[in-house]
Image 1 (cartoon, rainbow, N blue to C red):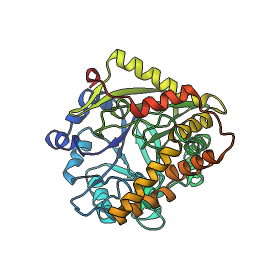
Image 2: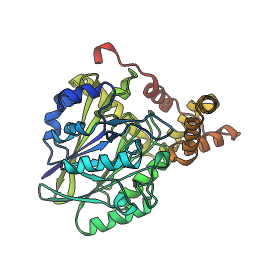
Image 3: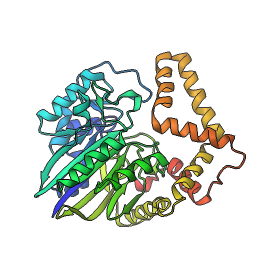
Length: 390
């Protein structure tokens, strides 16, 4: 049997920069033995690793570590780094090229981004514990970083990815597809993410895994194939002391004879000093919440109802606040404001939200919000991290 472990976002930033600089392994805390049990470890490198100092103009924050921080990955070791995310190009093509060189020079294989379209979109093949594994990685191309001939990430080309999956399955490979997508901080993936992840599963992917929302989301099993919509944060520190932004999980896959035999989730708390495994009571509560946010996938209408419940929560006031914030930024920092507006128009997570929200506002008979989903949405966005759980 082969065990594969998949972790989400890793970046030596904020509170974790001094932790990783001082001791590359300290950030993993008592999760390290769990990670090291695997035959193959996959992590998302959610920043550039570069000495460059000038970031690009973009909608959100910019993240980078130094080339030396790669020891935080090699010390584990992580064998594969996924790069199809919205931060690996934060310091432009030159910063990305340095990141690529640093990872590869240190024995870490990469997938999901490259200096050419062919390199960015190519699957990665690996043999672990006697199992042939194909890994695909894709993202929404936020801030127009998707490859279109030059440097970029593998973008939202679901049909092309499905073709790669079918070819890999014909070879008898075990296939993992990793997507960086979706709306941040909410408990339910938007319908377009569900449709894309399910399409890749139908094409034969044994497991489809998501990150980018920075909070855990639900999972489902379809025809023996696993879909996990968001692992939440990993070694990625966010200052707000909110429960769901400071809680995440790694995913382990047990592969036997080229098929998924079992899977496991390994939840943890994210503290300023690093990761901490949840205690028995904490883990029981976490698993119960994960079951609750997985329920929309069990019915034909569930995904749409959960999304409409979020649109109702977001409401005209949420839309107004977001637009006014961008307009204010265009007045104080025009290039930043322009990047924010462009991103809302060109990136699926924002464009889908605005289109569906505006459609709902116009409707004379909108789909009613369900109280059960609204409670979870409010909890995911506002529940504080109690002192006892830090």
